[in-house]
Amino acid sequence: MDDGTSQYYFTASMDSGKTLCSLLKAIQFQECAVFCALPEGLKFTVEEGKCVQASAYVPADNFTEYHVRDDVDVMFKISIVVLAECLNIFGSGEESSLKMYYRCEGSPLLLVLQPQSVYNVMTDCEISTQNADSILELRDEDTPEVAKLVLKAPALLGLLSDLERSCDVIEINLSPEHPNVSIVTYGMQDRSCIEVTKSSDMVQSFSCEESITLKYQLYHFRLIMKALAISTKVVLRCTSNGLLLLQLKLEKEDQRQMFSEFYIIPLLDD
Image 1 (cartoon, rainbow, N blue to C red):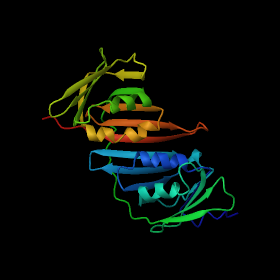
Image 2: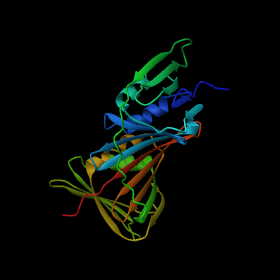
Image 3: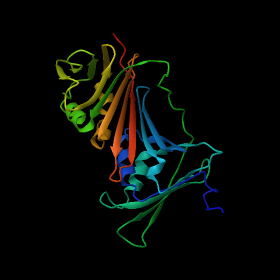
Image 4: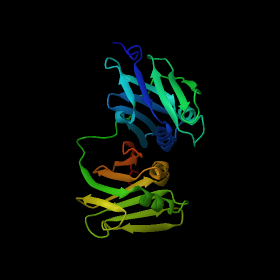
């Protein structure tokens, strides 16, 4: 029996779009994102130049219904600013059920939202889509991973919030030896250093095979702060070429999970 989904490339429903809205705002440092509907769930990706790539993942089990046609690629560019505004159309305090429909290439993404507190009220939103740009492939499977840390997200957020805003470079030193992690910031005149040992309360696990020093634009690092604010845990991975991967886990009340992921390119040595 045809349940009506075959005429669409993609359909999905969820009881509340509130968490999805929070996740989108966490990567909303660009106007548009690449929307990709995969069999395992939704992925939204934004890029800052060629230096930072951020993705939000919504696994399929977060939806009450989720269907992607297996004979097509569902990928397009969409304004995540508009999408977040539509998800929040009844106000930030209102839980609203969400249905999404995407008919075919070039068609708009259709949203149907219904507030849970008001019976027989709903709104339709159509968001235009565009052909997606190619996404940078930053990860090289052949480049070895040299360090992995699992940190409590609120603690890392507090640490980054305390960094001097006049600084423009952040240096991360990782080592198997004490103090294991040191974070140094540099500005025009200031230099500050914070040390964190693997026995610290904020560190849940620490693995580092060799000492490594990495430098990044502090502005790029600050792009993760909105995501940190809604996350419980962050996994930090570093490869030998200095590429930094931060995976942030957001746990919902029903114990299902959503994720955001940030790749940050290091500064070149002088």
